[in-house]
Length: 294
Picture 1: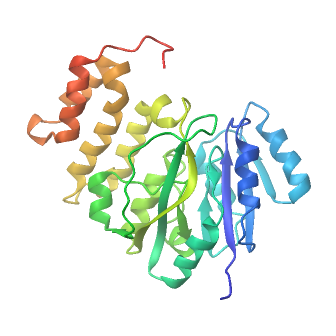
Picture 2 (picture 1 turned 180 degrees about the horizontal axis):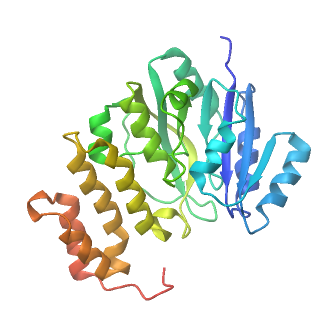
């Protein structure tokens, strides 16, 4: 098999603690026909210095920009990418050995797939595995556009492989929407490409207190709703809107009761699902976290 060129894009913002491990996990893959493109999105810590030190040894592409958000950083990287396939890897995650070979092989064999995902192993800020409910399924899951929208499901950066033609067809990332995975997942599925998820675990996904779902769930809510605004005519729209609100409720029912109350009020009770009711029970019975508490 002739292996195609793969472009691996790594946007980085203030991940000095993790960026070296991230980049080395990519550079040590057994699949050799790839280019690595790193964009420093205006980091204020020592991320840029750490990237530059590795670049001197390994010779990958490195670009810097003022802080504009991850979508803009990815568009910047895409402007330099030459690969047939695109991987967007978060700068705090770790790529497991064999990931590139496994996923690229699948993409080569399935020309109708525009976006391929997989599974992750959750780790904490120190790299220790986190106990997490996992599925033992060995089946490959294929998602339709309607299913993706109804569940507000995003094929995340830690596992995503895109066909470059698909990204180009949908016009790249909208830089005004600073949640990149969800918008691209829906765009590619709506354009008619297949979206598959492998059962393989291909990345160590780091959960810590600076994850956007914890630190910026309010802005993520706004961006996610903006993403689905283009699909209001879809029968799956209302289910997707509820799924997005449920995501925001996960944190707000504990840390911001007033905001949570407004979210509950924004959805008629007859539309609530089991997740909404679960969030409501937490809203009623859990006390607010003190500021700064974990």
